[in-house]
Length: 205
Image (tube, rainbow, N blue to C red; front, side, top):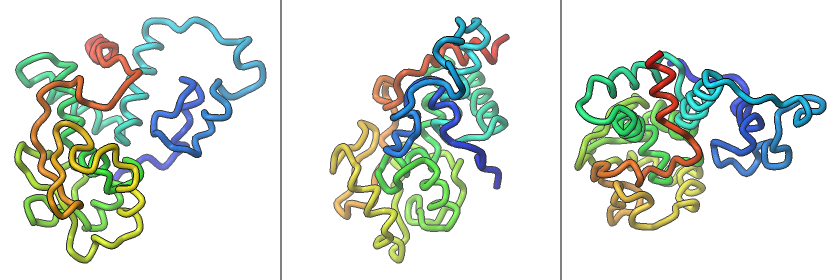
């Protein structure tokens, strides 16, 4: 299965902040583009360059390859309603995103590996497809033999809430499974500093 294998923080220094919320990101100590005199040679970006950068930021935030990302956008276009909102809902409904939001993984890439290795279940059935589309009222959890993995323990320590890490997830009584309640507003999605409308403009050229 295709996955990102190149430098994961390459764009972080360009935009000046970490898009993965990683404490070891080089952009924390060096929030400027690489190279000598990076700030001195910085030029105003064209409209196209800004659109492209926003697209790359969002794509890498969700740990997706270009083809996967574009297919998701096309599905959002075909869905009735606001394309930008539909796009974000589609991205947040992917199983690897939900696992990451639940706090079962330290990063979106850990979430992908967790799913690929068969540790994740949807409604009690094992699912090993990271791009699986989660539906409203689906219960996402872990295989019984996977509950004690160190990766999960480290991920759950970072949860912002023990009951609702995001408004559209409800943690169940066992603490390691959650019900997907559905995204009522894209304002609830914890993705900031990205202009999704510019991405719509980029693909609509």
